[in-house]
Amino acid sequence: MEKPEPFKRLAPGHRLCALSDLNDPGSKGFVFESPGGERLSIFVVRKGEAVFGYVNRCPHMGVPLSALPDLFLASDGQILCDKHGALFDVQSGLCTEGPCRYHYLQEVPVQVQGGQVLTA
Image (tube, rainbow, N blue to C red; front, side):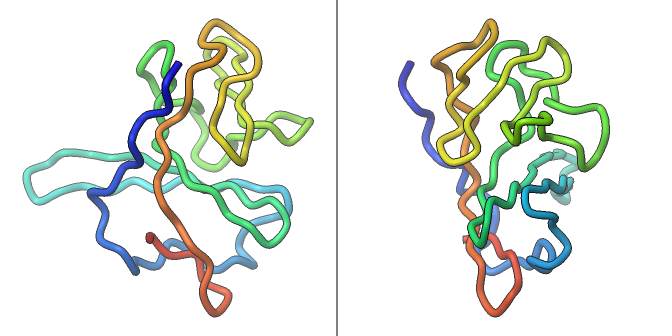
């Protein structure tokens, strides 16, 4: 399955959290609401000094990956969809196990600058 285009509708430079707010490995979710009422749920995952961002939507079912705000990781450190147990690689967003195998999460570009996690 082809990797979807990164989600680029968030303005670059928006502070999401401090890097120290994320365990290693760890995850944190965020919800943005547009003036028109459209909601976007994203999450970030820390792996070492790197942080990866994704839209909080399962490519199989189109529902949020987690019912809990900051719990996106399985015990082995992969991203987990708690609806049907699909596992996703943290660095690429590729589904490695489950009904959406070989599909990708939609990336949200993020960067770490000065100890802060920002949209990119």
